[in-house]
Length: 345
Image (cartoon, rainbow, N blue to C red; front, side, top):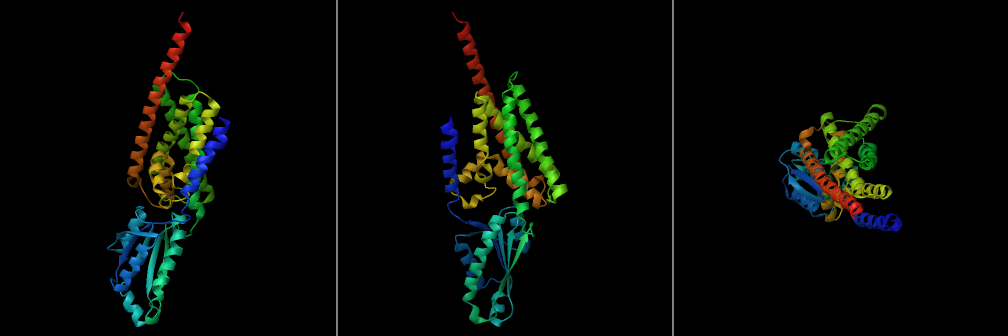
C-alpha cells in the first residue's frame, strides 16, 4: 500500500497532468464574429482568424448583442465585431476600429486569446498599410473588467478545498456503522447539508469581508452547492463502505479528489486538453460546480442557465446511491457468510 499510495498513484496522476497540459497554450477557442463590413478584406480577416490553431469561429452573429449573448451563455469566449465601412475607411485614410470582446471570467483563455488575436490583426493589417490609414483593435473584458485573477480563481479554489473535507466526513460517517441502506442515505444527506453550509459560509466571508463579487442568483448558488455537496459526501461514503481499512480508504479517496480542479478544467481549460479529458469531465462533479460557481460570482445568472448541471448532479447522486445499495448488499452477504461459518460445526 505504501508503494501504491506514494509512488504508483502519484506517478499515474503526474503522467496524466503532464499529458493534459502538453499543448502548452490554449487552442480552438470558440469565437463568435459579426461582419458589418462584408468586404473582401473583412472576409479575409475572419478566414485568417478561423484558420489559426488558436481560434475556432463557431458562430456568425447578426447583431452585436448576439456576440455578448454567446459569451454570456458560455458558447463563445471571444467575440470579433467588424464595423461597417472598415475597408472603405482604410482606403480613404480615415481611422478604423475593430472591437474584440473577451470573456473576463476565463482569464487564462482571455490572456492567450488577446495575444494571438493581436498577432493576427496586425499581420493582416500589414498587407494594407500602404493603402491608407492603419486601423487599431479595441478590446473589452466582459464581466471581469478589472482582470482580477482572485475573482477568477478564488471561488473554485475554496470549493476545491472544502470538497476534500466533505469527502473525509462522508467517509468517517460510513465507518460509524448503520442500521441499513435507508440510514446510510440519511447520513449522506446530512453530511451534504453540513458541507453546503460550509461552502456558503466561506463564500459569505469572502463576499462581506474581502470584497469578492457575487452577481448571480443566491437560490441557484444554494441549490447547486447542496447538490454538489451531496455528491461529494456520497463519494466519500462509498469509499468508507467499500474499503474496510480506514486509513487506506481515506488516502485513496483524497488522491482521487485532489486533482479534480485541474482535471475538471477549472484551472486549465478543457479546450486546451486532449479529447480524452472532455469525457473524463463526466466523472468529476467539480468540473461542473467550479465553472458554475465562477459564473455565479461574475455573471448575473439565475437557475435556468444551470439546468444541465442540475440534471447532471441528480443523475450522479442516483448512480452513487445505486452503487451504495449494491455495496451494502454485498457487505451484508459477506457478514452473513462469516457468521454462518463461525457457528457451523
